[in-house]
Length: 319
Length: 319
Image 1 (cartoon, each protein chain N blue to C red):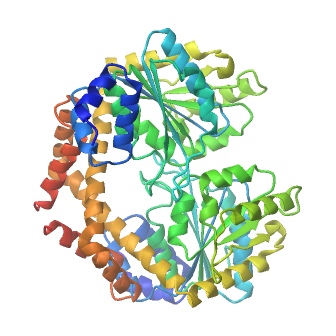
Image 2 (image 1 turned 90 degrees about the vertical axis):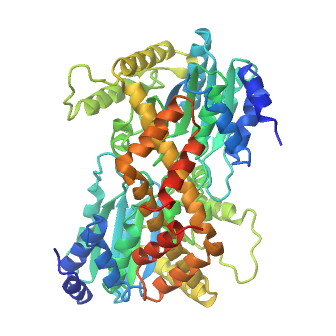
Image 3 (image 1 turned 30 degrees about the horizontal axis):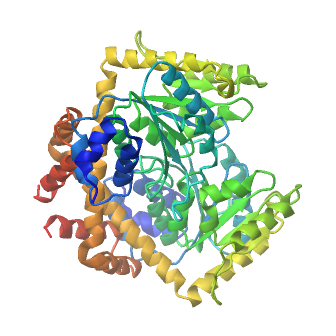
């Protein structure tokens, strides 16, 4: 068993191995998960959590890496959580482009962690909030959470981050895709990366147009800025940091940060509670109850809602 | 209030409006949802449910439409459930390519329904199993469920269908994408559509190679076939139907169909039960409990796991 108190002390003191070990403990749902979370509780809350999302190919890893550099130049400690989509069956992640981060690998002020997405709830890994909490408690000023914007993950990231950055690139038919995926509703800051390519201005214009559609903002409302970057050369990254800081300041002035964080934590608590209840359902006499109910639904003698009622009744009647 | 008994009778008799009305009742979680599900219970179970998934642009709608024609030529009644990704916030679906189905709009042996994906659980709409049950109970021999294969939805569809068809098209960089998305683990039948285009053979070869990797099948195991089609001209569609029928026969002979259906219904019951429990959590004194717990987590005096324990204790202690 790991000595959690000691690991937390070491992580606070900047020990990268202790941080890695703590994330492993919370990621693997180890028996010590609860002990770790209890130890971290009084320490977390200082980090600014920035989510980055976008379709494959827009340059997310390169942009994240450029942002790390920009924050390091400002003397900030930075945590990076890269959530990779992977097979929910195999659990294996394709981490090829993580190597682009290697320039930061030896920097003691940077923690980088890759995490596979897993489990039937999809999207962001269920362990992401816990891992963010570890990085936060370890003293990171900024935690960058990078995930591929397909399907559910960009929504999940918006619910886990203080500020969400949506990345696009020219010539990817992003317009209609963006509308489909709903990313126009989650971005606090938009970045058109690869801005040295043809079509960057058109993409920014189209995006600006779409963001303006149905606009009925009140004075003081946040209007997501659009920043053009060439992340591979670090161009525009300082402007992204400025946009982030502006958004953070706006959130603080308007009470939005506290609101978002309260909603995030409430959601986290509910999710843990639901997972616990779900696991109790699975445990009901080794799943025999569910199997027997399923058989009755299949033979037409019961509908699934009545079956679920019986399950819930068995659960809340006590073990 | 709708007269559910009468609607069910009309749906059984082939009334398209009654089918549409029943789906609306189950989709909207109306107060009559339970009444409808109870009425359908003894009638469902006859339909063969085929899921179709693939990346945007592979020709899913065209392929679905061609399959509808093929099954109609065989005298089968066909239901189509097209699940569109849409913003989880706005709930709006982009149904542009639904028009390709219009050739079947006046056929009384075909029911077509579009459904938006909604809600935080993402992927397939939570109402999809209920809608499938309506189409099943209404006497459809085959129900085709079409969804875009991004992120979670292709996994969800595999868990809702008897047979899952994965569609690909040449020249879309499908290889590595396929591996990433895990579609290689869910397909019972693979279709390379747009087979008149350059690269179709290469795509089929690559797919065949990847399906063979790590192959340790026992005699009698199912080896997913790869069928080439040009769905827009109906070419290869009969071969797809043959592959589907072969898979169905193989599942019946090997008890796999009963197994899949039992697992599917068990999962459905659990999901309904969890939703009910989740809603009870939200109801706990109007959400005040969760809010108060979140505040204690935010000020560092409680960790989210202990908070969840308190929530669950409050719930199972009885209302």
